[in-house]
Image 1: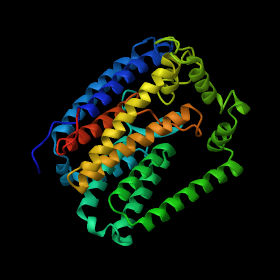
Image 2 (image 1 turned 135 degrees about the vertical axis):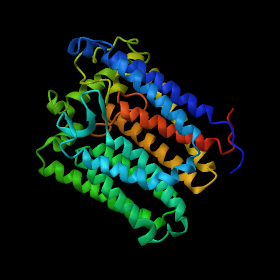
Image 3 (image 1 turned 120 degrees about the horizontal axis):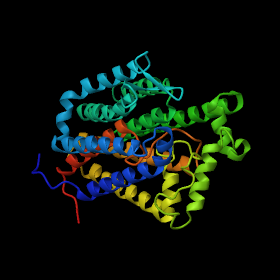
Image 4 (image 1 turned 120 degrees about the vertical axis):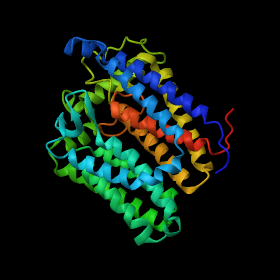
Length: 373
């Protein structure tokens, strides 16, 4: 390996600013709720500060370890992620809002194994592709194993149920395998099959389903048709974004966070950003994500080897897909699904995994020559 370069400080700065915005907005959006429900307006603030500290340590730690060294532990990390996903489906799994997605103890010392699975899959897939890059064009040896891994991850996470996270993980792996050298005909076949399968599933749910999945689709088509139930969140999100105008109501002056928009510190935090900071604030957040993704793509393109390229692609793919889904849900561009905004929404294990992933990206950037001006 060539002599190490300085890490990509533009990437680092964009992440730091996003995390700071996240801390501020989590506090602003949750204060009223926690003051009434928990008699502590600083409940989420104290916890997000702790998780941000853990995440910062994880980012620094991962940035110090040469990315190719994770190859030694790739198989163990992959198996561990599968075991954790299986455990969450047992009585050890913690149920919240009719979903079994957490492991841990009590209400605060918990984490989501699906978050661990994202980072584990990035390390395992990139290592695997780097070891058999000459076989990636072969269907049996280069494509089928990753298809089975996608199916395994998707099935375990979908069973929680958590379709949005399962979808993100599958898309992320798909992007990594494509960049890793899969045959173009395999890419077209899988993409076509996936789109047809998704369309078929949504059509089936729409015409025959009577559960919450079908209601989410119908509420997306016309949220005002059921404004007090399935369309409620979307309507409140649109009201928040619309009332923010160009410059917003002002930091801390959101109306929708006062028990109109459920748990605004999570999936719909972008709506509160739009309400308090306006179009300008929302645009700044999007620009920061664009800078982060741009720097990540440059790192992937200029990575010194296949493993670094695929690993960087996985990290940026994970972040980009989640950003697109979260903002699309908040603006009613797609049906409502539970997906946090990276680095900003409240979520301990999610924040730590994202920052650890950025640590890996920063380490890769040390091994390439980039214009850091």
